[in-house]
Image (cartoon, rainbow, N blue to C red; front, side, top):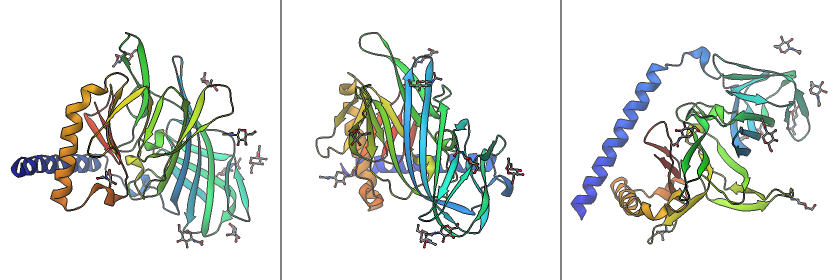
Length: 314
Ligand SMILES: *[C@@H]1O[C@H](CO)[C@@H](O)[C@H](O)[C@H]1NC(C)=O
Ligand SMILES: *[C@@H]1O[C@H](CO)[C@@H](O)[C@H](O)[C@H]1NC(C)=O
Ligand SMILES: *[C@@H]1O[C@H](CO)[C@@H](O)[C@H](O)[C@H]1NC(C)=O
Ligand SMILES: *[C@@H]1O[C@H](CO)[C@@H](O)[C@H](O)[C@H]1NC(C)=O
Ligand SMILES: *[C@@H]1O[C@H](CO)[C@@H](O)[C@H](O)[C@H]1NC(C)=O
Ligand SMILES: *[C@@H]1O[C@H](CO)[C@@H](O)[C@H](O)[C@H]1NC(C)=O
Ligand SMILES: *[C@@H]1O[C@H](CO)[C@@H](O)[C@H](O)[C@H]1NC(C)=O
Ligand SMILES: *[C@@H]1O[C@H](CO)[C@@H](O)[C@H](O)[C@H]1NC(C)=O
């Protein structure tokens, strides 16, 4: 038992090293020079992100709204962050307890994906809340916020929407400081039809009814620990799960009526997690996550994506 656990640990260890080399290789390829890096005059501290995906043939779009707590490190009247394939709606506002600034002078450049917001006034050092509304397309190219389909048990075509934000696609799902060094906490909420399930990095806090008559609910997730934008993930679909008997916070999610096919993944995944915890002498929860979900998705760019707290597998 010990040796087989050790073997699993070693295999996982090698996989992690290989992933590291792969990421570094990619990073070198897209080697960022100073001009295409964010200036860091303003840095994010906490994101509150509300997303409404529309999951309908002929309308795979989403609406988003973000309140981002930012810190102004130096005085400036231009805030620069990342956004790509997003359309900003209306004025962008910036406020603290005593002042409120508005801007309708913003552009997204397609070379660096910089969203530059110009204010009429100089913003002095301190903490502010940046408020943006935007919309985007839930695309079919497996990047950012994308859709995939499968045939359900009754032979009907079904859709689910999910994210792939590594290496730098978070900017396609919400405006953000999309470089790994800009770590922040995130609180994500997703509005969806109540027959669907929404999952994200953390456990859900609450499911709130909406007052429209549309059978929709808001699933609000707990605040994440401090993390990079590329490790954020969410998914909405008609899902089922299997929980591990030893620890119900370890779950396998599949499309409806397919969860029983996840037994092997559930038990092997749990064993792998335990071996890795033994190997590293550190438990997963020490990173601040109270659950792990493994979600099987019909279409992905890679075979798997190790988002924090929610791992996607093809
Ligand atoms: C998609 O559906 C939503 C909700 O019904 C609607 O508000 C939005 O305008 C639609 N978008 C398009 C492009 O049809
Ligand atoms: C948007 O911001 C501009 C510039 O600050 C301001 O002149 C305009 O009144 C604002 N529009 C709305 C609808 O608030
Ligand atoms: C928007 O900001 C740019 C850069 O500061 C400035 O050159 C331009 O005049 C501004 N446009 C408007 C309409 O205020
Ligand atoms: C709000 O920001 C303004 C200028 O950007 C600053 O003068 C003021 O002191 C700030 N207020 C608070 C409560 O931080
Ligand atoms: C801004 O918030 C950070 C914590 O996020 C804090 O360390 C810093 O002192 C705050 N700055 C001001 C000027 O309030
Ligand atoms: C999803 O649908 C598109 C077109 O509707 C199709 O080309 C694609 O193969 C489908 N994917 C799956 C996994 O069924
Ligand atoms: C629904 O309406 C009630 C009463 O009008 C209000 O108190 C509540 O905040 C609303 N809930 C949402 C989610 O908008
Ligand atoms: C189950 O796992 C979670 C982390 O995924 C951890 O916080 C919790 O303590 C574990 N519970 C038991 C009974 O092992």
